[in-house]
Image (cartoon, rainbow, N blue to C red; front, side, top):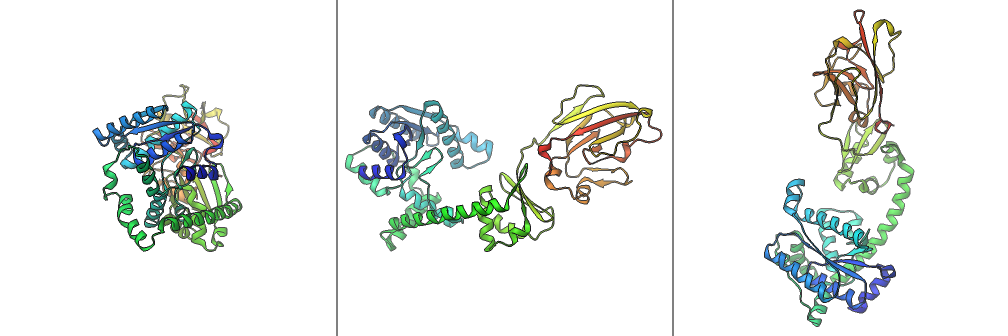
Length: 449
């Protein structure tokens, strides 16, 4: 086992220069084995333990055990207790997802604060196989068939060469103590059910099942690398960079064959899953304005193009005020205000970024906010009421520009769709005596390109 461990480190170059490593140790059999292998190899390491406080006295006993292990190996020890339940309630995520986020965030802090180069987790070959099976059940592309990567950023997995049986054999031979999490035997969790019920059936059919899967994952990884190179070259040709993301010609995507496979490989790195990539094929034939959204990106169609833009987080309730002409202004954009007598205004400017308003028809404070569904106004020159959503459609305003549009209001009335058009009710008329002249300078990063 020790020789195989050393060979694996050399083959994968996981520890260049045998750099200091932080070991994530739960106290279970896998992480205990990893700690002893690192110690036997004379490697520089520290031990970190997460107490998620989910198993009462057992969780505290795990922490005490790992602390004693670190003392016995004469290694630095770090422990932290997490309020997983609070994150679950706050973010509306699963216990497993909350624990993962808390764990890896803390590991990153430890790496930076204590000069470790990487953090090692004790995933083994069985874990990698179980991950592939889970991915197949859920639905996956070729990347999901490659198992668990040996390295992912600053996270390494130095036990992926070993089976669970290898680890159990070493621990029994050396009579090493470890902690057992009883929940690992509960089949209510999908991974445990795969581990205890499905994998044994596969091994009964093929006793060399794990080794077969090891070869399969290596072959899939080679194919994935080839595919990623080809996809990167294709993406470079098709995706034209804009301020907000990318612009892609619909016609070029329609030429791709096999189209579904290409769309998945091109767009999945932006958070779009397989089902959405199938919908994307329909988006190519859809009308302008149709869109798909991933957690971090939005794809929308505008005539002959698709636009792939990173989402911008905006406050749900974002409002700004001008109390009166001449008062101090704090706005997220530039706005110049000037009060004129009517006879001082030689001509009404025609630029969309300029508004000439009858000052005496305005009620202060003026309110600045984003547009909302249900908004309506009386566009200058049209004479009647129009929903803002219909106004945008008529003017063929792209989705990103809609989302970034600011509205100026007087009370509950829209005065100006900024950068677009003023409301007819606040226009300059022959009876106007005082004029409010506004010049809007939008943030260019929010504009459609």
